Image (cartoon, rainbow, N blue to C red; front, side, top):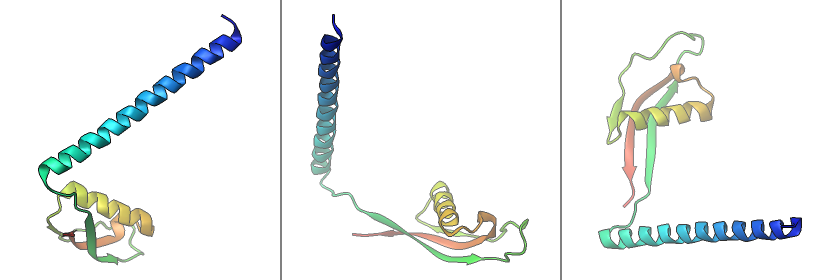
Amino acid sequence: MTVTESIWVALVIFAGVFLVLLSLSFLIRLFSLGIQSFSGRKPRAMTFETTDVIESHPGKKDDYSSGHMVLKDVDEPLAAMIIAIISDESGIPMSELQVKSIKLLRQE
């Protein structure tokens, strides 16, 4: 087999793999639409609201929060993820944040 023949074979194989991946993507979307129509519900967009995020004593670096946080319709791993995102986006260390409550807001 020459170099040009092997390049053509490789291109045909790449095209075949690409077509298989496109067909799988199409089937997954089709199944998703079928399941949504079967269940009779449309997926809802969920938004989260964090309240009372306060920077506490920037001079005390070793203090960790010992306060209480109220979670309303939110589980602890999700609350931890929300607090980590707030800390990362604001640049405030998590040890300096005081979160009083986290509440799930549903849009209907």
